[in-house]
Length: 32
Image 1: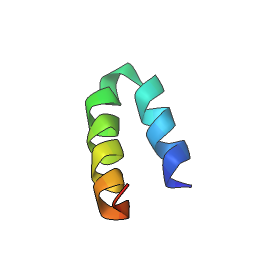
Image 2: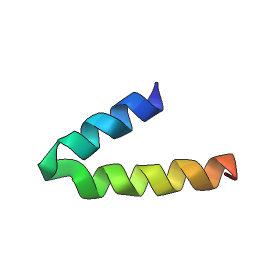
Image 3: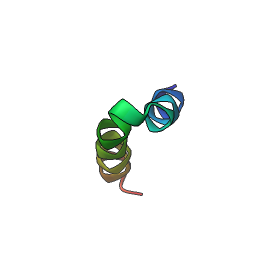
Image 4: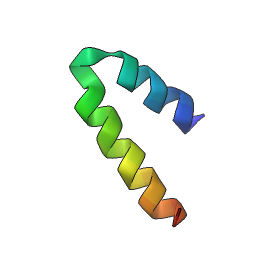
């Protein structure tokens, strides 16, 4: 569910930086 929100953030040019932040942060939390 979070990934879908992240992908929509990437599509939204106004929120791509926010989407990238959450992409990195969620990856860190998952230890991936």
